[in-house]
Length: 257
Ligand SMILES: [Zn+2]
Image (cartoon, rainbow, N blue to C red; front, side):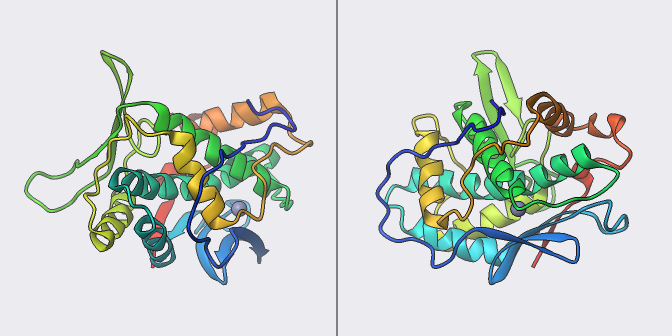
């Protein structure tokens, strides 16, 4: 799954337009920024800034872009799945920067090839989650408040379920805020059920839309077992900090404007 040279390949899809920018990352004062002129997301490494490290998603830019893309979709189910997949891709891309940092700790080193691995990880994990059907984005939170948190429920089998979004065991109100705002603007219900959807097709639409600057491929330097081990530790929400010198990355996710 993560051996050097493996590629996440999109399927052929027709899209009417492409974004007027490329999904590209830059290193600026030790911070990894994914941007298109304006910043979509950032990863601040803990080895660079122990106070402020973590994943930052920039709501305004993500919403603006996801709205344009979702509006291009005639099928409302695809539009719903696109929005959820979009946020998931951005999140897993930044999470992969953290996984790579763990591999190289205690010294932070950045290599532009990391971007290909982050993209490969993001597409692979999001596709795996979207395939666990049926998927439903529900609400979870204090019953008497308007607080809503995204919870994705998927089935492993008839009687076994996955709960969490964008990965089992995790829910964050900030993601629901982004998804809810896009859904409001596009006038779709922010719940989705991708039971009958083709996960690969949904991701391929985003792939072509964003005009990927980096091919989702596992670079040659990757040691598969070391990477999978670091990735697995970081995907084990609730236990991830047991094997780490820093707090859980899931407590370091923020939404900023
Ligand atoms: Zn990146």
